[in-house]
Image 1 (cartoon, helix red, strand yellow):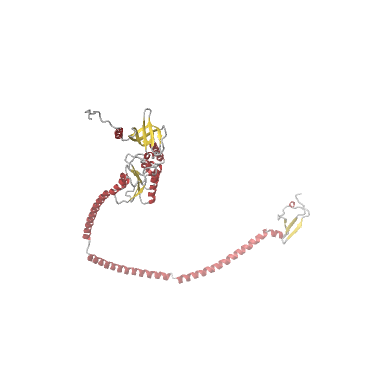
Image 2 (cartoon, rainbow, N blue to C red):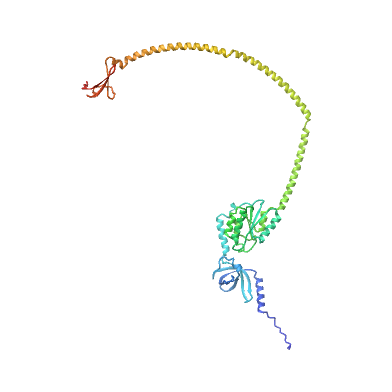
Length: 451
């Protein structure tokens, strides 16, 4: 039965409606936030999700980090640790709990990833891997471009689009690799090695599209940095957007802000080539035209100077006749001079006949032989007389002549000549040489006049 009473109170929301509206309001008001606090009550159920609270001295807030995000965390945070989180503010409608869905967590302060980034950067810089002197120049016009990136990412699409627009004639080889996640580091190193061993590319683009620091972290790994540094091919780092900076940017031979910029940098512009070809075609045509004009002018000049060949031949024939007459005259004169000289030489030869000179020489030899015999006889006679005189003189002073007068030469056994009797002892053997022969005797006694 209608009592006529109408309820004027506003319509009440259900609990579900209120929580739903509150969730949408929170998510619309806080797209993404960074929050710092102390981690408390960390729970890790078998689902792989993490649940914990973040608190400070006055308040706390519940947080949930689902498995897809916490798998990227290198080290599980500890109870009571000061951390920084990045995530979205929302409301868990079933319980009406205000919470944050966490996408990234790191130690408070500098941040673990940033700290690792700076430490590796300092280490590699001290080793000289960032030095400009070791950077290899890019080829002016590459014959083949290698790309190390994901086959399904936006980077390869951007690179191929730019290359197709600028210079589609350059072949491109993709060396596919993961560019995000734990396996990406080793995968990138293997892809670089494949590109080097393949041996077709002469420049290598390494990169991916934009993303968070965690998404790009594989390009901050030491293994990737060293693989790029040791790559013999010129390398271009094309990681993320313009504001993103990775270790790969410092190690590579060239850093570009985006993959598209890398393709722009490494490839020549076919429109520039076409423009340059047209300019050179015009310059070549102009140069050819000027060369033809110069050659035409020179041809006209030479044609004016060209004489009638018949006249030239007649002049040459006349010159030959003149030279023939001069040659005949010169030859007759030369023959006459040679004849006169031959007559003169014949006369001189008669005077210097070998037979005549031989007869004169034989007569001279006979005279010299007679003189030699005569002089030899005279010389022998004079030397014989002189020898006899010297022999007589020598005989007079010779010891033998003295011995002939009755004297003797006495010698001891050792051959010494006895000059004093005191030098000889009784019983000693002595030898006395006389004019003819020798006498051997024993000394009986010694009488010395000195005693």
